[in-house]
Length: 173
Image (spheres, rainbow, N blue to C red):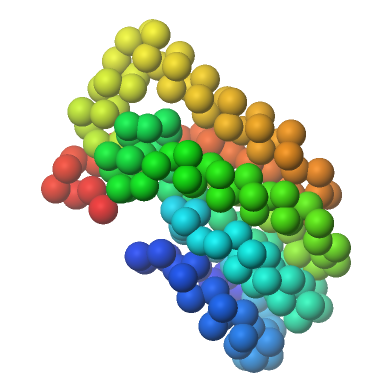
């Protein structure tokens, strides 16, 4: 197995436990190269830092930590769809990047990308006019710019926000 994905609920809640057992995982999965987290970034940033340090300390080959952040754009979209404010998510992510910048990593790099899932009525609102679409896109551009400005680590491979998904209310989780 080369790739391991953590998702469902909020997978980063278990990071302290996974950190504790990661060296055993590496022995059991010697070809492991990719660790994917689908998260809403409500995790305490230090927990993810501790996990990444453990990954790097136990790796003997390149490792990639990939964070897919579930963020629907500015509030009210994220707050309505996820029950948490976009500001809380972006503040956590910025704090995480600041801490990540302080790490010396030999084997591990990081990619962060965003998945925006809007309910159909929010999609129509956000992209239904030039003004709204410009504001929505501008919010994403500003966030990516801020994160790129903060990230001085050579181990950060990039930030990406290149897709908006939509969901009908009954299918939305």
